[in-house]
Each structure stands twice: as C-alpha cells, then as structure tokens.
Image (cartoon, rainbow, N blue to C red; front, side, top):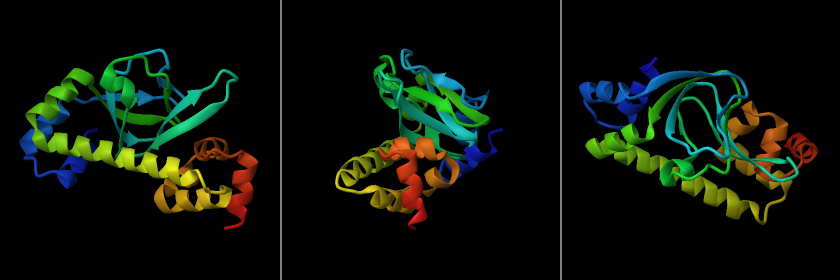
Length: 189
C-alpha cells in the first residue's frame, strides 16, 4: 500500500527509512470509485492525497452547468483542493476521481505537523506548490495568445498524460476549446 509513497519520498529526500515509515503512518488508504466526488464545491477540504493508482481532476461548474477542468493528477502525484486546504474555506471547486483510484490520505492537521517536524518533507511540499504555480502561470499566460493547435502542442510538451489518458471533453475544457476543435487540432499533428 505505501510502497510507491515511500519510494517517492526516497527519491525526493534523504529521509531515513524510519522517518519515512513514521510519515507513512499518517496516510490512510482510500479507494475511490470512478467519477467519485472527493471534495464538493461547498465543502472545506481537509485531506491531502497521494495517488497510488488512478487519476484525479479538479474542476469548476458554472451557472449553466459547464465544467472547466483546472488540474489533473496522476499516479505518484499529490493532489488536493489547495486553496480550501490552506485557508479552510469552502472549496468552490470539485475534486473528483476519474477512474477507480487507490489513494493515500493525510488529514490537514497531521500533514502540517509532519512538514513542521520534517523540513525535507516541507521542501517537497514547497516544490509541489512551486511547480503547480509555474505550470498554472505558463498555461494561463501562454494560452492567451495561442490558437488551438499551439495549445495542444504546449500540452504535449508539458503535460502529455492529459491528452493520453483524459477524455477529449475534459481535455478540451482544460485547454479552453471545444472537443471538436481539439479533435481537429490533434489530427493536424
């Protein structure tokens, strides 16, 4: 159950095996069904997830019922509804499993205690935050002047798993284009 998680920490830190095991004791196994909502937009997020198997998506829903995907996470990645996790206010977005997923879940208070106790874990958390911020900024500002084909090329270069594992409808909502436009752009490659 914790093998991928422990290997992830071994690869990212120089923590001792005993420390990694101690940290692992705070993560509990959760099996999520396909399309299960883990965090509803009205809920406060108190869980930090490590994905052993499966994939998660963060999305919003507008007043007309149109979904906009904001983030996708895959195996051996962490994921949470971060603004809500940090500020403890309603998420305003949904966190959903896109397929049957095996997740390791750490409660917010435990997670913050762990990153206080283990500076190397805090460094990993900071790297996750920084990488997420950089990717979001590149996507937002890069997409402003991109046509559909350029958006698809950017995604292939920077986040290829999105186009390989996610439905065209969800990938298109992430890219800010229609599914038919995405299909045409992919066929031009």
